[in-house]
Figure 1 (cartoon, rainbow, N blue to C red):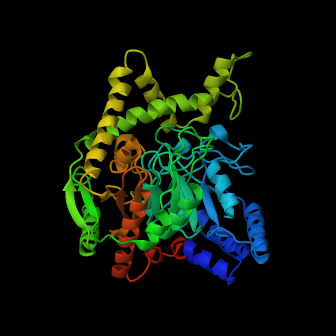
Figure 2: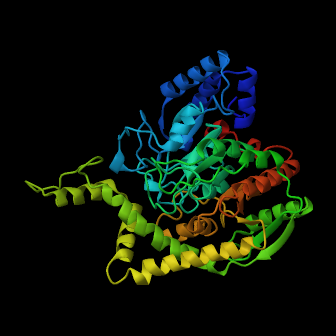
Figure 3: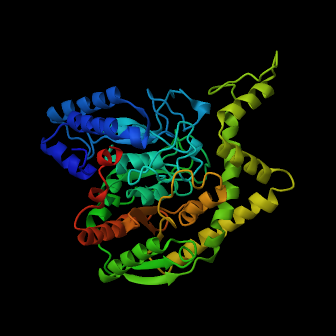
Length: 499
């Protein structure tokens, strides 16, 4: 049962072929079998998930008309607050903290009847591209447990890839849903900024963070997108526009006559040959299906990483100031001080509670915002951000969507880039522009390079999220015809790998 896609499982639940309790127990059994090797989860709530599943079964037996995904289990990235389950953000700073309220995304999952299996591992406060910066140990890639699953949402991607959860929710600040999707062979979507509520999402960079779906198929992602999206009056950045018809687009999946732009700046040097080859093959399939494909230049994209690593740390410096050891979270008394001041306790607690990558970004952001440097660094980065948004606008006057490889390489070995932060930052070169401009993006599996998954990225104008699913579903169908079946079925059996 754990091998079923979410949409297939939903159909069986509706038909009465299986119960939600059976489906949820199957996921919990799979977690028991494989998570020792993968470490996708930081917390598993078996009791809560089974209780929610039993409630769905009772309501369905009573004849209640339930939402499409009711009874389908889901995993949630540990950056979203959850009543009754810890929310640690992968950090010692929040070890053991149980929030008093649900994030809006979590509340919508519960309202739609999705049992929450638990909380998934992540780079500390979502800072990282490999899920190696978690204070609770690295997550491993189900395709090769000696390699990273991408990050910061590697836990959510690995849970879906390992067939431990049919669905998961991640967050994407600079590619943290899409890049892990590419490295684990899953579908990951960053909705339009403001399309999914950030209320209850522990902020890393408020103008960039966006929650979104992680799934095994484009349709599954669309179904989850529809559940979690929509206006939220508790989030000042939440859009009031209606949710785009993403499920309809995923079911249609027709690219006949669609104009597709290949971004010249998101390819070439630094992109692994196998990654580029899979991308070119996918583009050929879209062309054969009737799409018009042209090359588009977005010259400001080459400055995306530089701008991002000034804007994001600046917001990190501000957002993480609230972890001061006074109100909640870790509190450490400085050694050798008889009556420490609040400042001394704060300094000792932040030193003990934050990992090296978090400290690096706080320091960088504080420097960029400091007097005398604000205009030269943060101000300049915001100007580049405007230029990137203009490049997107100009490109979308010529084409309906833009495409590129999701990540320049396949998953690298654990530990390979830990001592070289700049090399790790480059893993997000193709995903960062979408976050800086607030436009939506989708990554889906495009095949294998050297036996590891490769991702294909689709970008669309703001509020045109349905275009992602139109192209994604069409390409997914074309690739499945080439592979002879769904990509998820090609993943190695973890039980054999770990044996």
